[in-house]
Length: 223
Ligand SMILES: Cc1cc2nc3c(=O)[nH]c(=O)nc-3n(C[C@H](O)[C@H](O)[C@H](O)COP(=O)(O)O)c2cc1C
Image (cartoon, rainbow, N blue to C red; front, side):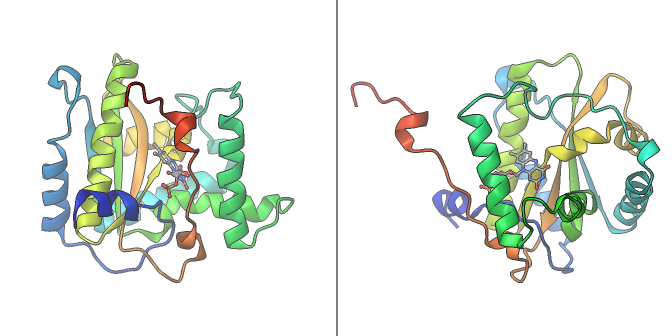
């Protein structure tokens, strides 16, 4: 698969087959992805990949957290700016509506929307999960480096016929993740990722998200 095809065929995948991902394959992909660039070659990412029984254990732990509202945690960072403004508000709204339309969940059915959202915390049935953590002292430039390696991983996954969904929702359960992985206090969770083979029967996987017109996001001068 060439790079263009990998970029074009990567979509957030929210339903996976039970098919196992060979351990050697995921190791190869993660190793190759560490060629991603980073400012000053700091490589500020820390990656935690979970499969098999440990993943089942983690999911069971998460289910306990979800079942008990008193176990909700203080998010470590705002996934979106609290005062988000247009055009970002519209884009966020549009993708949410498009997804729920695919799933046939109406706007006012909040319980159904919540139930769907909670599938995030079971990694949408994926056989592999990944977490990306970062030292708290790192700032916006290093956080952008995290995006470099995460997209590199997602594209390399495509090259092997695998799919993924990046998941910032994990920012909602930083203590559970820190305890499970025994993270040092100076480390924080950025995001998770579901990894596996897409389930073609899952309606959410048919969603093709829109993008802003090129002129809205790019300026070409002298070209
Ligand atoms: C860093 C990051 C975090 C994300 N977090 C979530 C998430 O928690 N749950 C989810 O369902 N999708 C999540 N997404 C997927 C986005 O909604 C998706 O990338 C966007 O709508 C564009 O769609 P596409 O990935 O299919 O092109 C995340 C994407 C990124 C890049």
